[in-house]
Length: 191
Image 1 (tube, rainbow, N blue to C red):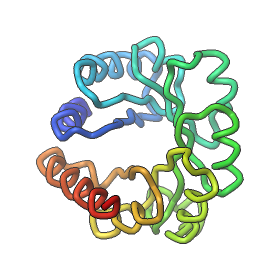
Image 2 (image 1 turned 60 degrees about the vertical axis):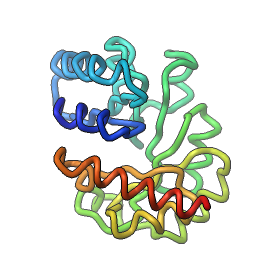
Image 3 (image 1 turned 180 degrees about the horizontal axis):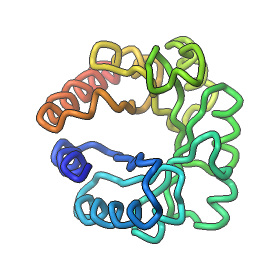
Image 4 (image 1 turned 90 degrees about the horizontal axis):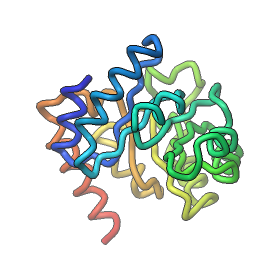
């Protein structure tokens, strides 16, 4: 995990999420402290999945809230404006609610079919991503779920301001090339 964080910093990735859901709190805290040391002098911001308490205690930049997490408004009230809050959303209404509750950005999906998000039902599709991006604009939307280098341009063209993925970003040796390709797609779409 720490090698991946180092590779993400070297590749210039904006956000890295520690998504180790099954780690005991103490181990997650220790991992986060080590990851914070890696990201501290960089532009890469570090999020911890679901655990705002650990994120704040370890000095991480923020937390990523799931649909089973505390609401963003509760986390915002408890941890203040300095903690970056991202919220997973799977519908138009969840996206709107997250913004109204004080989140800084949303992750919307799954956009495409993916095994890791199969419990959420059928993919939302690029058209639904486009509608959500329009609905919450200028609020930042990150596309998630089955995102690959082959379909990242469609997500960006739909209005997503970024993409999140597990498989696409897991290879530390290819990470810089993947990020470069995504940035090229983003620049083409912005032009």
